Length: 411
View (cartoon, rainbow, N blue to C red):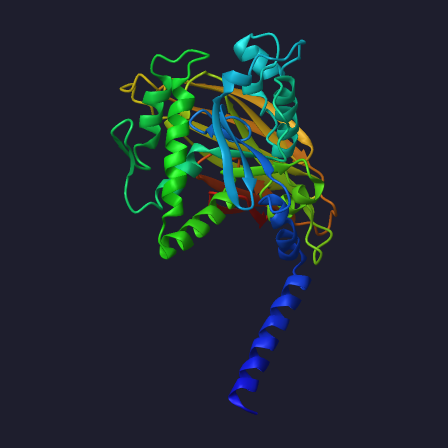
């Protein structure tokens, strides 16, 4: 066989293996099929991005202070605009009953757009947010995304140098991003003020421009970082198109509450899904300075599986910065499978507060039923330690994990 024929054979086999891989890996194949629609090959795709500040935690990641709209037309971003959340807030003509915790904290009467991300299940919150936007006369986008401040900070770390904003004569880095953004967004701010959205617009445009100029090595780093951001749920996406939404869900990008199910090889396990959901309702940015540690105590007695979950919040604000920090007033919900429990935290600067939840599970099989836990980390929450203590027939086993994204394990 000649070299040219041999080369053609190798190329043909490689292409065949690659095509077969795509067909057998339906997830990747579906994603590729949806790429033209997502990136506006057939017609422009309308996108709305919610900017969430996770220094003021809310169920889907953070307080929605601003949002951006744009279209993607044949892989190009057009008509990029930024808005303050108050631009669309307050346009609901009729009374909307707010969640009880929001009414308790703010006493505002009707539910508002800025508090609409109350469900930790992002697809559910996305539908609520889109309804509020529709009431404000804003056209429904095909894709709705939520981006946390921590995601933007991670992207800043890719840049080979600080981002220079000539109109402000400022150098912005990942370390100074929040401080500078707060100064230009909150100083002399009032609802209706344009300074916040103008600064975010200038910052976003310059950041996008810098990404287009990245070297090959930094573009590879960009893709790797973006993949991690999606896994950490610092970016969550929802589409009104069911096929695209199914792909987002299969990829784990949709920020949904997942149902815990037993692996096929051990069908008689006891499934358990755990998610701790914090909502900062103190009207401040105290999550800059709040850490948490969690302890899960599990006692197996044959008939029931008793649980006690303890959460210790530490407010490490030293009171030196008057622009953010302060007491941590938060509504805490614990989602256990289909059950929800609720408590409040009110931790002053420099103080700690511990809350605990107790619950019971019935094993699927009284003779052999290991617990399969799906522990979901809330979007916007930084990593924290989880100590697990299992008591089984007077024998105690203790392990410690660091929760920085969703994790599954056996008990």
